[in-house]
Image (cartoon, rainbow, N blue to C red; front, side, top):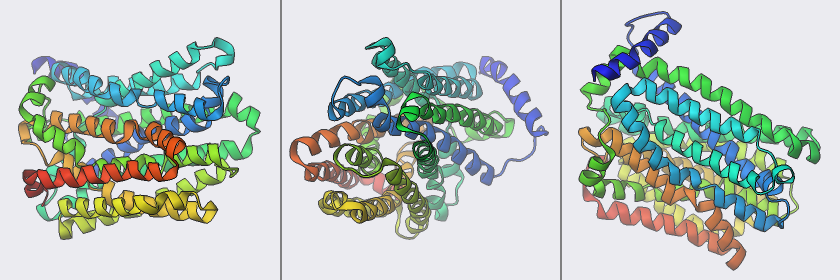
Length: 442
């Protein structure tokens, strides 16, 4: 711990110097701001890549293939970040134990920014052949390892400091980053698609959102360091036992909680990609509609998602987070039965699909972090919550675009609805089996 303090001391001095005070009290609202900024930056990186995996990479990296096959190969690279993320968690938890949370977060976010901005310089297959795909895969793995280290514990700290009657409200705060990141990414891509010729967009226009992502990461780094390296918050992390435990020991002692916690939010995580990446690929591949227009629909859907996440906090405090997760999983199961027909019903159907899907997503996703952070004893919460989040994203979201597109191509859109249904069923089973989770959430 002495070594960790020594390494973190310069970061603490810099953070205090930037903000002009030494030991000023940092209130919970500032934790919430740090959490939102951090999550928005992570999700912006995520969606910039996700949108490019539909709009750009099939043509740039796999130009010799037909559009469908090229998109499938692009989606095959997509989950590499989710596979690498638990590895990053293990690496950066060790850095946290030895050198402190500030050092860990700095390295992780610079790796995330570097991996993201490196994609902006990606040469196409026309220049380097198969190396284009290999470099893209390498950068994607770098993003995943960095995301494993970007876990700062602020969401758990926020939940632990929330009044008991307001736990649902504070649990939804970190989740606001997802629709905010999507809106920013969709708006940028829509702007460049709408103002540039197709040739200019594929040549250089698509690269600018990746440069913006790097800049956003730098801002997020300072916003989060402002909190995590100050003495009062270091002491609060320690008093709440939000310190890194060894990954292997945590897995051995908490494997049941980790598995159940990973499956509990699968309905929202499966829906997450079914209303963001997958429908964009469907529109791009199987319709003649404007991609720019659909990105704007996603932007509007993100607004509904923000509102629904806020409502989820109010509802969770009235009926309990476990009950809300169960009800929304059942609603997602119902939605999966007619969602494919809406997506295939033209412009109005797409709009209803997107807005309805984002409302359901906001209500369910808004409380998925509560399911993760409430399922562990204090001594294992910091590492256990990070591992659970990693696995939930891997199982629920990592392969969703590839699986949904393959199923839709082989069996029609109804099969994509069945995939979404499987996520809802998994959530209901997990909530039903884990009575201890239910007791803690309610």
